[in-house]
Length: 339
Image 1 (spheres, helix red, strand yellow):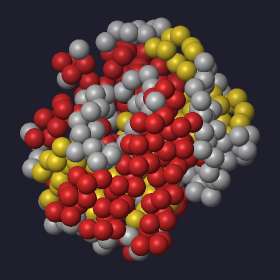
Image 2 (tube, one colour; image 1 turned 90 degrees about the horizontal axis):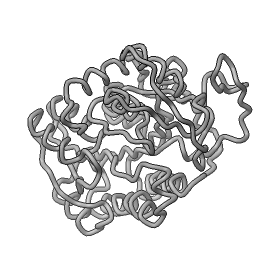
Image 3 (cartoon, one colour; image 1 turned 60 degrees about the vertical axis):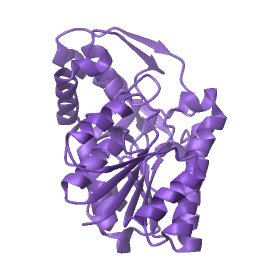
């Protein structure tokens, strides 16, 4: 049994990770300030699913973070807390910076001072690669596609921080790598694509798969930023939790590494394709309006997940169709969560 600290443990990914590890027999502690929509509900749900310790704290509070880390001295830290929306970062860049960059720095300092032997998995983002303007894209079969990278973006893609969100996450990403080198903290980074699944309360700014499912199930139309032909590789939350477990269990292989984590080529989905799939499942035509592209939006992002497979044996197992239908089943089973 390991002691595992999950920052942002009442968020979508954090709540699922907390349940995954707690039900696997580990002692799990959640650090969360419950500020994000859905977090209080996720915390209550968790209390009915598994045993865990809860520490209400903000990662911007360095003293409090160090206090929790020092008291627990966890074998593993999953650093999942963060500000997650590009549009929010543009509207309020200071808060975005303080949560993502300074918050991560506070976690690193707490580990350096109080628990340097702890394994650290840092949740980064594909947005550190920017708009991928050096990669040629083309319209193919009604959606955008890479002209010359069919397997997707690998970890050697140059960094190019577009938007305050890309900058704050990119700074955190690089701090984690350097603290691993300088202070020998066993740390590694997941640069993650589009995760989705139960306990996700998506909106127009972030969590688009869940937002589409929830909005259309409530009978609403959709507003899409861009032309809807943009493509992402989508990853169901159960597959992500398996990746967390496999990578932290093989720290001798993953220490110091960067991994692009997503659904990969097999789970590529355009926004328009998801709208069409939901229309089939719900038996209606879903009205859609289109708005301007957002800063830093990529027409195509597909994770090349070969490095994760080669290094620690992970690859996605849940198809995009199966995952979307599982998410829809959860939304239908919990109508009171969505007003």
